[in-house]
Length: 389
Image (cartoon, rainbow, N blue to C red; front, side, top):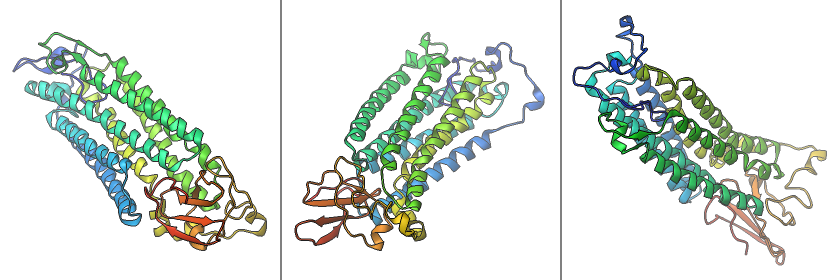
């Protein structure tokens, strides 16, 4: 029997119809007083609860983007794809639980060995695919909302790295054993990846996560936002670092269980962390788009009174506020409604006009310097910088 969590497969075994699986794990200490102990219900509950939470956040993202902002972009479709892949991941984990994951290996019916291992391979595949899709969605979001040239270049480079890493991971999953059937059938002679491959892949995954969540911080720090909006933005993006912590905890647990023999019991904790990681990553990607929804529900977050000394430091009231781009531009008069949104500034101003969009693309205001009149309209993508006229 191979991997039971989709995150760190153990060596496959092939059992006869009546041979107990414990026979294939020398050193296993059998304690029949534990025969009726099971974590199967916990695995199923973890899978269902974490997936449901992710689905709720995707639904909230749909409401925010499609209903409030009237936009829907590629990164939104990709996060829906990630949720579908998470659905398959969660389903395969539940199937594993039904087949014996969460029970001591000597109590698992021998005939379950092959289907349990096969479900483990699919679980591994959908685990990586869902995380990959989520990373792509976040990076595509960055390309729309972060308009510093150096940030766009960094985002493009990281996007390329993520695509290549994802392709490499998928290829190695399909070559987890050569031939692949050796992954779940010991009667087939083959060569399989050892646990060091899964640990190194997880380490690379965590590294790209850190880069992804660190990337927007310098750009956000340059924004001259009111205090509560600044805290709100940093809070939305800070969710990613909690995800990195979850990934680290999963990796540590993975390493600690590298040499266990009661694999259907000892790999339960890594299975929990994998379910949390896959679905929480989707939640993080959705939370980044929630500023319009949060301000709509809690308008007080965007309202703050500034003292006369503080007003000069507020980006919207300064003569030459820093921008997310390369050129400082003249600041137009701002209404109270604008003060509640906290816009990004389009750096592509050509001296004729300015275009501001908030981090979630709820609205844009263009101010012509020639005629001195303005109008308000939606951005074309609802997330990033629009085009100045």
